[in-house]
Image 1 (cartoon, rainbow, N blue to C red):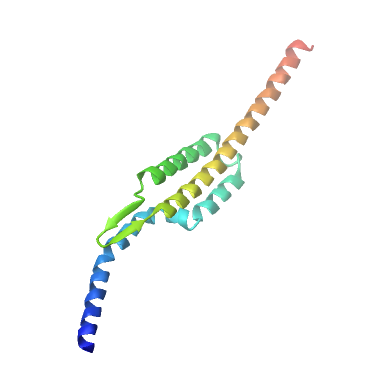
Image 2 (cartoon, rainbow, N blue to C red):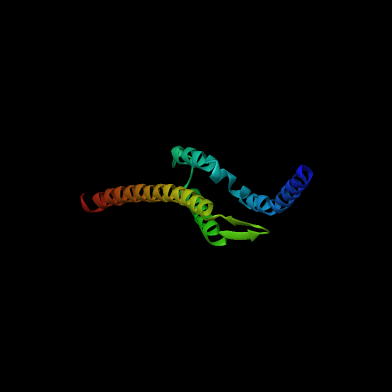
Length: 139
């Protein structure tokens, strides 16, 4: 009797092992977001943002903003939220939501920087025009 039970346990383990290959492979699809998962990209963005306008141009910040905006869309709209793989159904809603939110937070930081960069440039232009105005009309 013990042998029969052990044989069935082994058979069940074998089936579970074989059927778990699909979900394990599906998880690998999220490896491309590892920097978001580990929050490494947050640290990189903090360094980038702390370097400021002296090191990076408005166009560079705008490019990063565009790239991360596209990443948010890719995560939220191209990722499969639920997938049936053999006897398992993998639910990825929470992971996708979390990755999208992290990428959106980076976008928000970049957007704040781009706006501030733009404001700063506009203030400089206002001062230049004000100076020109005084030179021309306030002689």
